Structure formats: structure tokens, C-alpha cells
Length: 306
Image 1 (cartoon, rainbow, N blue to C red):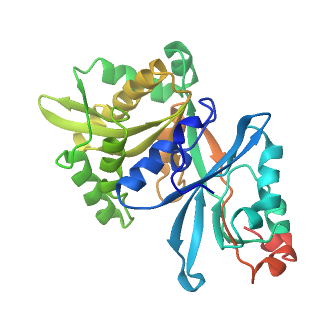
Image 2 (image 1 turned 180 degrees about the vertical axis):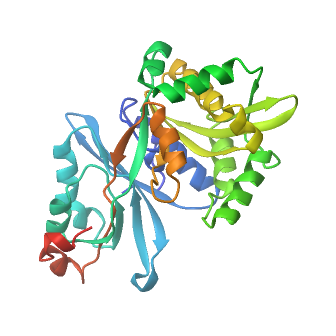
Image 3 (image 1 turned 45 degrees about the horizontal axis):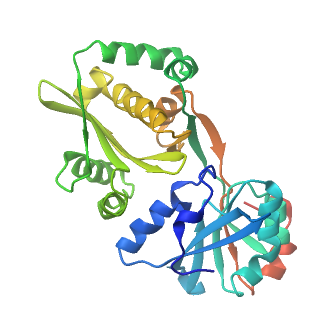
């Protein structure tokens, strides 16, 4: 694998999730972290791509983390990576969060299940009329009310002093979850000029809602968002998100990743995301390939797999 690859040679139509994108690699390198990338070619064209980060993982020591990857045009290419994964990573432990690889195939390749699969909301972008038609009726009604409520939209390059970051950290403390570090978003913005943007909604000068969107290839990702109590009254988040959807579609992006769907702990947020017309897409869980565990993983009963 390459340690400092030329990230400009990836096919522009390969739908790379944030964690597998060149933009994300630049952001991590801006924080002093090492990112490695592997790729396979077919007919002179890159058909398979993956990025890894070195992470400490308990008593297993340093492992190679592959999050939301590998990414391929064809399922056969993912099978090719799986078959050769041990050689491709020189026998080193691999912590894999796959997308599109069957659990039975992972077990046969010696991967041990750790965490059960989660789902994300993926929103297809396109003409405004098409996006509106895919919205749930209640979501569309709230957007209409927001558009007629005299709200003001503004766009900003991420800045550590923007209220969104402080509000996100405060909300994380209150609800007991771990928020994404602002340093990553700020490094992304610095390393990829013009590809990180905050969409903010105000009324009478008061901040109501804001979301941070990161752009990468044909995809984009909702990184963080926050809405105030006053913002809920005016459905400000509907307007912020729809404004971002329109602009992203105009810029040529095809898919907006709205992040995890947590129907148990955050059912309201899950309904909001799916109300946009997004579809629930199940990821593959978390798996570890370690030489000591591989023989056991191959014999693990299917009912015990993640």
C-alpha cells in the first residue's frame, strides 16, 4: 500500500464515503496522522480502493482500521480484496467496518465479528422537483412554513468561534454521547478549500439552526448540526438542510450521507432524516482479522456472527 499516494487518480464517479475519500485523508494528514491507501486496477482503471489508519485497539495493539471500505464498482472486486486481504496487509491485524460484503464471506476470510451492523441515511440528490417529491408530506409542509417565515440563510467557512461547535459539544455532554472533534472539521476545511460549509438560519438576528456539510467526490456528508428551541418552532433545520441539498445538487453531488440512524436513542432525529426521502442503508458492522482468531472465525456458527 502507498503511504503518500497521488489522490488525484481515483475515478470521479466512485461513490466514496467520507472516511474513504481523498479529502478525508488530507484532513487527517493535516492533523499529523498517517493514512495509507491501497487500490486494484481492472482494464487499466482503478476498480477498488481502500484507505487505512493505524489505531490502537486494546490488547491487540496497533491495527489497520478500514472504515466504510473498501469501495468498488463491482461486488466481484470486493470479493477479490477479501480473498487477498491477508497478503494485502502483510498479515497485520485489520479492523474493518465494511459496506457491501456478506457476513458469511467475512467469516470465511477469517474476520471475527465485534459489533452488530448499524444503518445510515443516504439521500439521493438531483432536480429540486424530484427532491421535494420524495419528501414525506409532513417534512415538506414544515419546509414550506419555514420558507414563508422570514428566516435568513447564510453560509460560512468553518471557524472555531462559530456557535455551532460549542452548541454541539454542550448537547453531547447533556445527552451523554461523544461529539466529533472540531479539529477534524477545521482541518478538513483547511486542507480542502471550499469543500466545508456551514449553513446557518437566523431570525431577527437570533441563531436558530446550523449544519456543517463536508463535500467529497460525488458524495457529501452532514458532519454536525444543531437546532435551538426557537428554531424548532420555525422548522429552521428543514430550511437549512434543504438549502444545502439544493446547492450540493447544483455542484454535481449525487448522494448526501445524513449519518447514523438511531431509532432507539434518537427516534425524532431518525424520522427527520428519513423524512427527507433518504433511504436507510445498513452497514456491515465491525470485524477484526487477526491471525490468532482467523481459524476460530471460520468455524463460528452463523447465529453468533454480528
